[in-house]
Amino acid sequence: MPGPDPLASLDAQLDRLRALYRELHRAPELSMAEHATADRIAAELEPLGYAIHRIGGTGVVGVLANGPGPVVLARADTDALPVTEATGLDYASATPGVMHACGHDLHIVALLGAAGQLAAHRDAWSGTHIALFQPGEETAAGAQAMLDDGLVARIPKPDVALAQHVMPFEAGVVATAAGPVLSAGDSLRITVHGRGAHGSMPHNAVDPVVLAASIVLRLQTIVSRETQPGQFAVVTVGASNAGAKSNVIPDRAELLLNVRTYDTALRERILAAIERIVRGECAAAGSPREPEFEPYDRFPLTDNDPAVTARVTDAFRRRFGADRVVQAVPATASEDFSRVPDAFGTPYTYWFVGSTPADVYRAAVERGTVAADVPANHQPGFAPAIDPTLETMVRAHAIAALAWLAPEEAA
Image 1: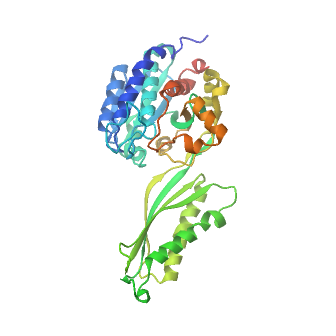
Image 2: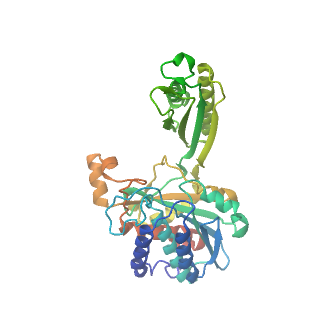
Image 3: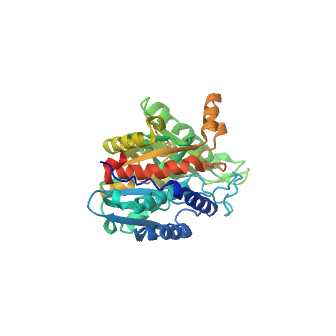
């Protein structure tokens, strides 16, 4: 017979969690500088009985051991973005030029809420719950910082790892999928060299502006002509910078590239193709120096384990109802969450939760204007509906954890 429901007391906690969300939204902190946020998280976790570990600078891990059983790790990211908020909310960011424009404040409160429910109802489950609050997701630095600071040796090895992300679809709906759900992401800074000259004497120059333009055009063929139709890949040149005056041919140009893929082998082929094209165009232009390649902001593929995803999805359907659980469409955004379970050799799943009021989202779908009318993550107007998004996310974290810690309760 099922025991007491570990989520039975959640309704009584929602006002406090809403207030905490507004507090965190007003006080965003940038990647790897989440000092006050980390202190606030620790202050919330400690009274619940979680053993607190400060790992990776501004990372916080709470471990709640509750008898024999599986070890479940749940992760929330904590950093904000260098975005000026334009939501008009009465709890908008009080920090100029910084905003929780990706919903990480909701992620924090949802995991704290689930931790609170598990701590308050220890008679309903057995095992160990790890609540991991990771800094620096937006810069792909935080997960690695925690690993470099000894995360694997300092906490129990999890049997499963869980994470979720708020997204701009219908609030109260949860989306799951096995396999790749977030792309691998690679940014590159490429510097190509020419020979400077007076703008009136191009014959004395090797023009890096023309060279960079040739490279940009040629890079477009990687997806259109070198990638098999049906395979997902994106190659974007986000910036091309050279020179400062109309009558001076500069001696170098810089390109900033971004690559997204769902397949590891394809990722390596595309990165190799970029280097081949750049070197080839430099040789054709008579560049006096070899080009320079600087990779940065590298995100791993998020590839959900099929068995773990099936177990979580089944638990969601039974607790939320099948109409609130949908098939996720893989997103072209990227995450560094998977570095943590990969370091432990632990299977994981990562799901999405909608945050747009149902009437707003459905009307936009009908009009075909979702992109125009529904502010998305990283936009200045991104404003998740607190209700029912927060409650859904708290329940999702708890339900997913209980699928291991108390399988009969997850039903």
